[in-house]
Image 1: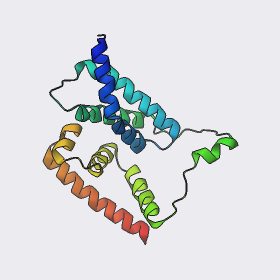
Image 2: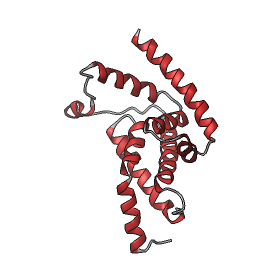
Image 3: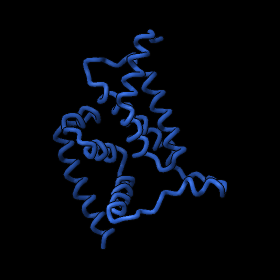
Length: 169
């Protein structure tokens, strides 16, 4: 089903208004710039394909998060096998992350590494929580109950606390 010009403009405006969602999800589920770019493109494609079924009765951001997380989880599953990749020496300095320069940077890097080890659903849950979404919004985005959100968050916080405490010792 082709979109009208007005529908297409509305879609582009809404995506632009909520583009941070795509960046957060792509960053949270990939390790390199190339993968982030690929995942971003895949999310955009799936949003475009699904838009004719979007109901304005629901918040666009909730709908967008749900599609973005589903695409990211599928992307992660497809790309979890080890891939041997060669990089030109000239490109290496652009690929390596900067070393943390202060205590706050080190703590952020530790937290990012801990989040990266989480299962996809738990990673999505934590990223939404860190983005200050309510339990109700998280439940709607992930398709789980608010009680389940609260329980999982409590367990995740404890697990991260233990992981970060071990890393600081």
